[in-house]
Length: 328
Image 1 (tube, rainbow, N blue to C red):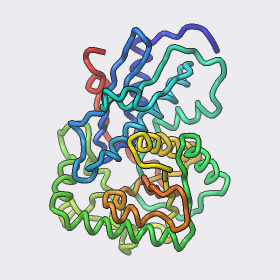
Image 2 (cartoon, one colour):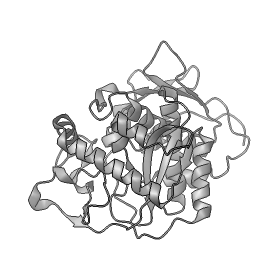
Image 3 (cartoon, helix red, strand yellow):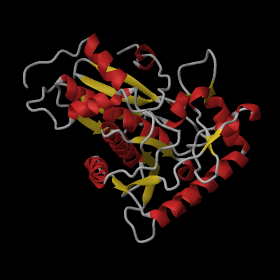
Image 4 (cartoon, rainbow, N blue to C red):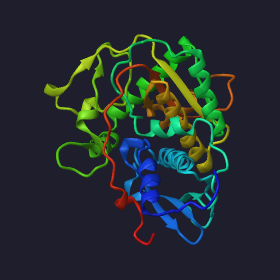
């Protein structure tokens, strides 16, 4: 594939629509996009007005959210025929410029697996419902590990005892979140119902609580009125993956976001569902404790629950026009 590609309105709509389909903490969608037509560059910027400062005081989750959007943008660019050139934190003088994606080169060959990943963008949703308990096959697990490695991160799938320890850390984090007034107040601000802005978590997507109390899901079910709370029986032995990086700065968080979304899209291609367990990462001591002894790298960025179940309901997204800067 070669030649000149037009970065016209239709292509721009496709690119940004794919980018904003990425997951983000509390569905906050903390991104803006700006096109630099003179250099055929699409800039990806932080939208700090949609930050989640109590749950994410360092901005780690914001960087991961934007990194996930960059991964989707890159996949969509390959789909449209470009060979995208991604730079993370390209200008130290502009700390809110998280990434730039150059779109001035047509791809000469098709990137392997691009079409499957591109189609998965539109079917990837967080699933807070019970999974069947059927194991994820080793070949699929290996592919998810490789997807994270491609983006400069590590995905580890621990054994039964380590998984139980991680779930207990997550449960402790959830107890702390429930007891912390600031955390509860911030969470309530992001749960949406009725005619509200197209971001945050819709009440219909909260999901049930685990009837046995054994699986600590970040589903905000405790924010429902008691008469509307529901419960269900979840899988007895959850499959939990640990996403980690060698270092722990803003660029590492962005790479972790790219890796997370690459893993989620690869999982979706194989019909594997996922929900994200970020609770322990929000408490510094619990985050340190989440590192398995004698294992490197030592900076846990996210826990991911994997399994088989329903596709999951989409959550709302801001219109493209609301995230594309007007001077683009």
